[in-house]
Amino acid sequence: MMILLGMPVIQIILFGFAITTEVKNAEIAVLDLSKDEATRKIVEAIEVSEYFHVAEYVHNTKDIDNVFRKGRIGLAIVFSENFYENLLHTGKAQIQLIADATDPNTATTLTNYATAIINNYQRQIVATGPVPYQIVPEVKLMYNPQMKGAYNFVPGVLGMILMLICAMMTSVAIVREKEMGTMEVLLVSPMKPIIIILSKAVPYFAISAVNLATVLLLAVFVLKVPVMGSLFWLILVSLLFIFVSLSIGIMVSTLTSKQMIAYLISGMVFMIPVMLLSGMIYPVENMPAILQWISHIIPAKWYIAAVKDLMIKGLGVQAVLKEITILFAMAAVITAISVKKFKNRLE
Amino acid sequence: MKVITAENLTKKFGSFTAVDHISFEVEQGEIFGFLGANGAGKTTAMRMLCGLSKPTSGKGMVAGFEISKNPEKIKANIGYMSQKFSMYEDLKVWENIRLFAGIYGVPDKEISHRTDELLKNLQFEGQKDALVKSLPLGWKQKLAFSVAIVHEPKIVFLDEPTGGVDPAARRQFWELIYQAADRGITVFVTTHYMDEAEYCNRVSIMVDGRIDALNSPQNLKQQYDAANMDEVFHRLARGAKRNSD
Image 1: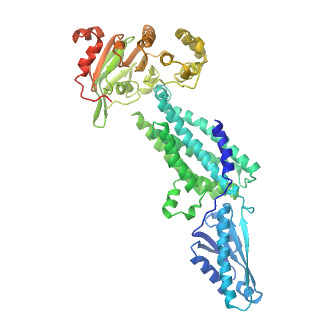
Image 2: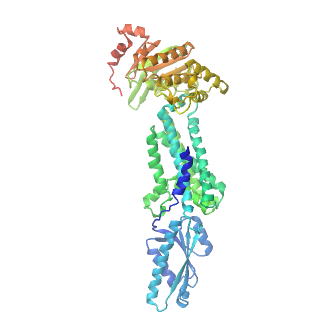
Image 3: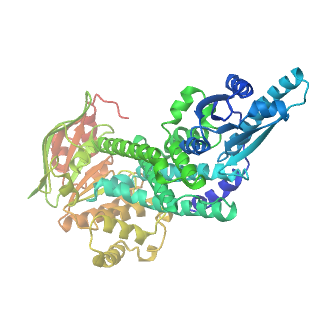
């Protein structure tokens, strides 16, 4: 019990150490207000580099906000008006780099790469021309101006803790009853099997709710990560995710009758992918296509994405409708499978 | 009155026939021994009678209900004690009694009264607050049996209830079984121990999924010209084709 309730505290402190990662083919947006020779060359240089892929060309400042909200792009590059003119005549021109800093590691990496490419172009024109030109990149960080790592790992830890407690503990608790033989006695009793399963799941639902509160309180008061969006929806989405995890736990318990195997299945099949593929530690965009594809079937990935949107970016519920739908579908499918499995076992 | 009837009860797992057309009847208040080597199909047959497993074919009536149609009704009328000693080891004695009494539908008001009665009958009053895991195995088994009949079922199914204890502890356990039978509870018991078979009113002996013999221990011994049940069993089991697992 101490472990179950204390674990979130320890993990949230441990994960304070951020991990730097390389970024490849990050999707970016470009707002080119001057459309001249220099800006075209810089965009080309950026596009040919292996780090970036220009996903969208936008036409005004307002659109930048919109593409960020969609969550696809990690960086936007804005060229000021009369870029080349300014560069030629005053020797100075401005570029603005806007990064989505909900994941500070990726944001830093992206802005560094972009700055390097721009500096490289600057060196080229300085070498050919007589006047010392200067391009001044100005970096702006969206959502997380102080680049706090906590902004990134709080949603991740939430996803992991809830998955761990619900899926692993529920499956182990049910399998333990099977191992001890008490399950059989319960099944022979007049109680319906669904009641037995529910009564095993309810305590873990309660513990998870306590954990959710602990992590959120720690995040807000100790790590100073504010809840930007609606707390109501954040909690509702979390409860949905808890439900998905509980049904995974019940499904695992129907697959095996040994506690050890239940641990292994929850650990290997559910925990490790959650840590590695959910985008919590490594950005999903950098992974090979096959791993990205696999990451889609991991509930925690969608949950963490939804928490980032709701908690850090402060977006409304309409921004996470897709995630909510997917989690709902997963819950339905997994519950259906476990009910069927459970019945088969009785045959 | 017959409380259990089985007619050609059969259970197949794929191509393997675990229970092969067994038929028998058990009277109310009878102690019915269900004998057989490991893998002969005893547990499968018992699980069907308890409503835990659906028969592939054949009919069975338990406590007046058809086993494949009304398993839930059957469950309300039976008690069950499994092969593994199955109580919550990290709960106290009285907590286990309260839990199972509640699960088996004993009204809340009666639970404490029945707990006291049960403990008194077992002379366990001093152990009320002991953790179940601290009790010796023989005591645990007696407790598990008493808990299995705490709701006064019509029938109690015992699946090898006395595994792993010495003959003296088994005798004490059987005294409890006799007490229950005297109160009109039908006892359906599987066992390996042939000394226990002697205590039953009637025994059936399963070989390879079939019932090869069914009679009182006395008559079986005469029929097979044997000095004790052990000899009877060995004569029948010699014909078995399945390996014991």
